Amino acid sequence: MANIHGIGVDQVNLNRVRKILEKSKSKFETRCFTDHEIEYANKFNDPAKRLGARFAAKEAVMKSLGKGWRELKWKEIEITGGGKPTVNLLGNASQLAQVNKIGTIHISLSHEKETAIAFAITEVA
Image (cartoon, rainbow, N blue to C red; front, side, top):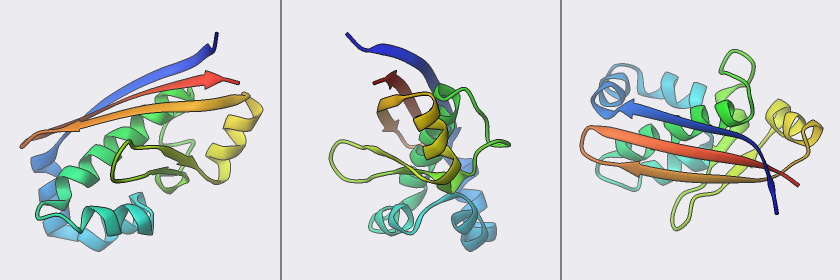
């Protein structure tokens, strides 16, 4: 039986994400998302849905690790696209997971017209 290290949930207003993308798309994307996340989201008519869900997922993962965006960088957490989403940790987030013996991170994403939500569970190996 696996031991849960932490859980996290976050919700994002997609209209707010759309406004940010209209105003400063490249700055927001560069600061918060990996190249793979941007490429995946831009395959769709409304990239804000995918980027918003990934933004929520990154926040949920941070919470499940017991940290916040002041302690981890957005791009240190990558959420894969297509099929079942997975989490790739980089840099300090990866080191934090190693120190805490995190073996698995479960992630679930959902989005509708105006809202995206994500739920994360970290398990100790």
